[in-house]
Image 1 (cartoon, rainbow over the protein chains, first blue to last red):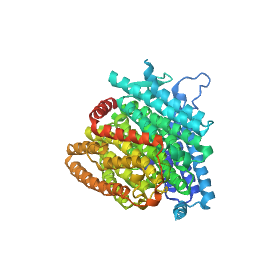
Image 2 (cartoon, each protein chain N blue to C red):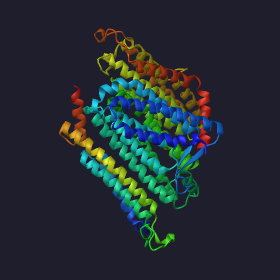
Image 3 (cartoon, one colour):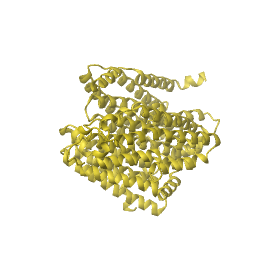
Image 4 (cartoon, rainbow over the protein chains, first blue to last red):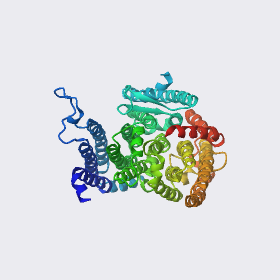
Length: 124
Length: 497
């Protein structure tokens, strides 16, 4: 068990970071901190992917000096996934921030519980 | 290659393109483009359905002609194209029914953006249905989330903004889990295409060192998609999101968005992990457990509601429970019942949301049952629509909901003993609970009172009446002529794996 943890050190760190981000996004009441949590969560996944795609001693997967043998390069697919994932998380972050700004202008608070209460009061 | 084989891909691209074009059009033109696009896609996809039905086998569409382990693929069978046709039809009807309200609820200079979001939504729905690549599915799940969030918040009042924020947070949690699961699954199998992953997963023997990671992957995928489709303990975002957005949005969200995620889950069950592996890992039991609790809790929360839209929203929680119960039975009959219920619930729920908007329109835009009294007389077609939807939800014979309940009961009888007992009892209790609040709602809208809401010479919009009539017909078709649809689902499931 302990040995596995040491060989998979980066993966373990990635999963712990994922947990931190996940709980922040789920439990924190402040919208900005929620967004931070979301970013930590996604970045943790990118770390996980990048580590999994890395082959010790491998170069970036771009053909250099005519070397065509696979063993010299790292796996390019996870890097591609990370890039796509970054695009997705950037756009989602932008949307969340825009939403937060709108909510802040309306209710002058970043606390999501207070916002729901104020929204309910608006009805009465 | 036959021309028709290209249509699924063309549909997705057309949606994305018209989304881009709509962003520079005026609201009216964007509406025209959107409506004609959805109808066109309905026709294209029904041609695909007809084609696959005739050839009796599914086919793979290679994007850019890269063969299997490298390229990105669409895979089209009867089930996928049936879902696509159905989704287009429901989307068209929901849009037509709520068109007047869209132009009222959305600020004038932003109406075209609403249709941009509808286009994006449809493209992501079709892509999720057709894709054979897990990562593509993830990307379109995110596009779907963004479009859905925009559809909720575009109404721009306090409630819908808060609801959108809540929806977004829960959805992001779900997609985070899905992405984590995908990364792990990629590391386990070395593939992203569904069929290749399945081959790799089949080689993971029970007791080997990769079995626990596989269990983790399955759990993460199921929880992620369950959050997104609002299975019981994760339904907190649902009532607000459905209750406060514009009626078309609620109809589309409840009947299509959550269903697409469930469809993706079923796809993962059959095509990525394999049904046997899923059952071995006991995930079906977990889904079954939460589904039956959801069936009860959704209805119990609905009984307490006085707001017609939130009542329908809570009933969605119960109905999602039904679908997961079918999946959780772990048998083919259960899965077929679940797939049929996806169709019948989508048809009834979108009709209920649209009808409810028609009813509150003649009651001073109130959604409270005290104001809605007698609205069934003031807006006759909406009253009839609501009644049909409610009876279908309760499960009165001839309506769509009854047929799916029969299939559920049949599937439960043939499942294992403990699941049969629990399934049957909960089905019975849940039907009674459904009857309590839906029949009460119907009685309430036909109680004559509240004369001061009578608008002399009120006529519902033509599109609304037409949509309502089509919804009612669709409900009866699903209820009475369910056999061919069940046949199609059965053939589709065979092609699915």
